[in-house]
Image 1: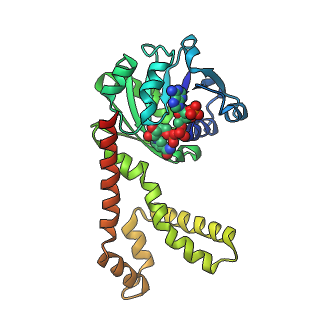
Image 2 (image 1 turned 90 degrees about the vertical axis):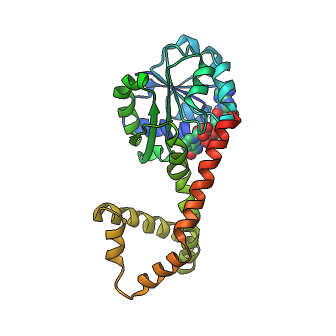
Length: 263
Ligand SMILES: NC(=O)c1ccc[n+]([C@@H]2O[C@H](COP(=O)([O-])OP(=O)(O)OC[C@H]3O[C@@H](n4cnc5c(N)ncnc54)[C@H](OP(=O)(O)O)[C@@H]3O)[C@@H](O)[C@H]2O)c1
């Protein structure tokens, strides 16, 4: 399989490292960049690099479009890629399939929404493709599963909400975790120890959820009737913790829809 990455920033690098770590051969990957800024990265990972304006010489199965929304049109139109041969797989938030098809002058367009957790095989990646592209599923989904798990969306519109909850959502939880960071710093020897304790604390939550098959059973294991956990949870509910998160989801979803109209 021949895979290209148009753009080699944060998400492209995370995906490339995830793919290589899961056993994909470096010879399957080419980065298509407009300059040599990321030379250290592609040298270190022994992957090929092609200048975007020389990309017509290679036949790709999939090219992951990994540029900012504002750069998507120029990156596609300014490259020498023969989009009729390659499937364009866009990770770009907010740019619709319809627009991507116009930019690439091709119908072979698929949208995905991965996270940078691809780097360590833990991305929950959403995929949306129109009926005609479904034949690509066989090759593409196993590739995406190398970086975590994949969820197929039946409506392109759902990508807005998915982006808000999963794409941006890790950062919302991190923001909330700052409260714990502060407290753990108070109880730990130093900042380094506090970070390690915080990481262990968070991974233990994931393990609880996995072992107990969900959040409610996990909470039940921690909470005793009328105990400290019970009181704390009551305070969180009284202060409408769910509304706080819902407002973040809503704001991010709204922004995703705005981006769609901007470009
Ligand atoms: N970061 C995430 O967590 C994440 C998750 C899911 C989806 N996404 C989506 O991924 C996209 C990229 O995000 P990012 O965080 O990876 O951004 P980034 O780190 O800024 O990387 C963007 C890359 O695009 C390249 N680029 C821009 N215009 C180009 C052009 N005309 N031709 C070739 N390359 C071009 C830039 O190259 P130069 O070095 O030459 O400037 C840069 O390396 C965004 O659309 C975002 O919606 C991001």
